[in-house]
Figure 1 (tube, each protein chain N blue to C red):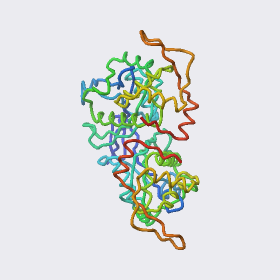
Figure 2 (figure 1 turned 90 degrees about the horizontal axis):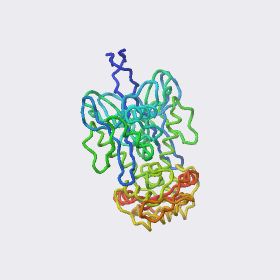
Figure 3 (figure 1 turned 180 degrees about the horizontal axis):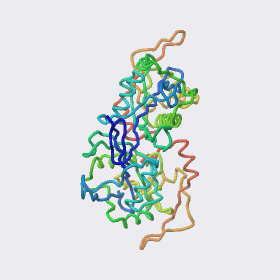
Figure 4 (figure 1 turned 45 degrees about the vertical axis):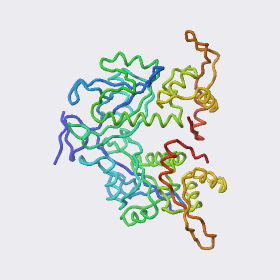
Length: 227
Length: 227
């Protein structure tokens, strides 16, 4: 049923930059477009906002529909409103960034046209999605310095090597092992578990979990993770 | 001329939380609504996004039209999309926060229905503007810790007392003078000028300006202003 308004208005969409970590690379989840414009080009999952749902609900619905992902960490990033960003008509898009634990990430691989790409080698993207992706990556890198968001990308139990690997993958730089451990443990955010991680020929490694109560306290007083 | 669309779409607006500092209180600029809904209630300056302007342009245009302010520091804050936030119909609003130097702030007082209020005593606001205001204040407080944005609220030349007064007004807490000076000067962000500020009976105070090049370097390497 067509809708009539007194004044013209932009269309409103949501787009999601979904990050995952496979233990080696930081990855982003893309979908292949089936329709014009940019048919067959890779794009961020997203779509139009319905009148009866909030922006967060729209982002979660589109993510579930297009990638099969549910129960992810989702945060609003920025709203993109360049006049010519969509060749069809004026479209304003509220962008989100999402962080996915490895356990949930496998669901997405079932979605027909969804695929994970290492952030260092993503294909050309539709619309202004390369710009949205760059903003999301910058936000993730920035937040990792004063907000241990990275835990959202790790399994519930992890080793310090896994944590360091994640920081290295996000920041795109190698970190000194001894220095990293000292700093991470200095924040008193990690709870050592009575379990070890066994990985082939390696020496069993101490497993940790993240302490949400300590995290909230630390966040309130402000901190900076200098690397 | 009425507009016809295949699917219904939300209306899109921008709203601006404008902060100023008068040397004593942190203040916010509000306008009194002339029309229903919320007629005569105070509200954030803002309005509908036109098809041929970006979101930033819409925010600057509305600010100029409703408050007379131009050339302000403006940053996108968050997009608010609760389903029932406007009693008339679905309206999604892209919120901005703006910082105004005292020299520019006086322009706004010429606007018919615009008025500055100390943030500690703002009147009841229209729509969800109290929520938007709270989010802007939280952002300003948070950013002051790792981004010396506060300089946008000071005159180009300022004393350490004025800078401390601003931090106290934004954070809503008294700070130890000796400690504050030591920390601020420790960042090597301020350039002492060959000028003193004379204020009645007080001893003439050293004037400083902010060094943008040093600021950019510091921001890149990350820092936290612990108070």
